Amino acid sequence: MDRNWKLPGKKLDEARLREAGEAVANQYEGVSVRIEKEDPEFVTFFFAVPWDEDPEQGHAEVEITVYALGKDGLILSLEADAADNTGAQNDADQIAEDLVGELQGEPVDV
Image (cartoon, rainbow, N blue to C red):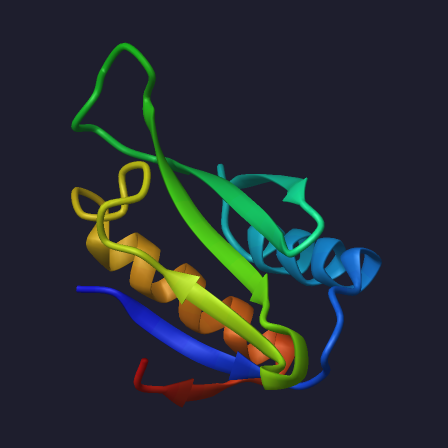
């Protein structure tokens, strides 16, 4: 199931997003984050979390994206079909909630 949150602000602040992502990753042993601005209108977080389901890789990739929607502001989205989000749903949900807390977001129905 996709989950979305509204974040304060209207523009992507890449430095602030990077700081929040790194703060979340640092809360957990064995978790790292890669942050990519793939487009002027969105930034994607790729969290590598320890995972026994794929012994070759040893980690799942949790993908969370922040979209800039112009006058409608910023939306943080945890999409079920992105990366390993479905298989690692508990980790994905927890990391998304932690990231929303760092960024002071509020749940929203889209």
